[in-house]
Length: 359
Image: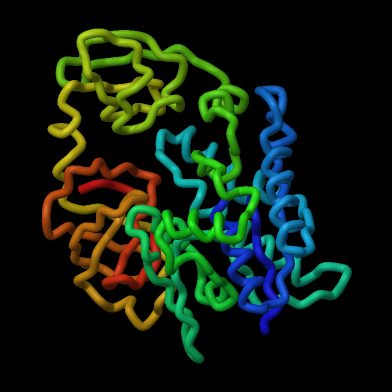
């Protein structure tokens, strides 16, 4: 029996993770992390986090597990949200979920429970991520989840070896439909609840409302990439991402966002997204986190540069924290600066880094 802190969100995945550990006989305590935007942006609409917390309470009551609520508003703001806003101002496409896991769920939360006044000592922290982990006497190995579509190792790639040593992912060996079946088996209040979508700290608030609240609006030109013709006006380049098709409000499409000029507040669009942004041969990566040191010297690996089942065979032509990844076959996915590239050796996730430039 192990003493385990389980992060619950009010969703079905973390609920089943909690139920599985409870059934296995472990001493489990559930924790709900209260995040800053739930209060600060409540004026944008209702407070859906209250419903999340009610579901979490219902699950804990059903399983007879204690639930503790920890405030992490300031940690989210300083460690995740500020980073994301800075990257967006620079015209990049950040992935805040990476830092959410590294800095908060497996960072600030570790510190909070290790320094709690009640003196409780938790050996492990479990979450409802679709990932698997193999703990050996010398290393903890992060592996892809059984469900190739739901696999979330991409979002966990920035965890250090020290963080992985305390991590558990109880549902990683199941596919999504099996998790739903388990929720019904345990008759959990979340058994029929829809999956949440969107950025980790934003909850159910609209992302454009969040950006408007923090970055405001500023009129700029929408220009056709190939001709330089002005086709319209936007309210700020930060409302657009590379590859975006919806929300441009222009006729004669489909139009795609293919580039942004942050300094001039220009959004470039094209009807031929593929010709402009696809067929890239590689990328330059910075701040790469190798969570498996023994594999950092390998050169023939697989890479993901966005969440999803698609992986691309690649060659790593330089090592360390700054490296170049060259694809061995052309990709039809756009590669965006600011996103993360994650390397794999088969099912083993080796770590990830920030894309500085597509090649």
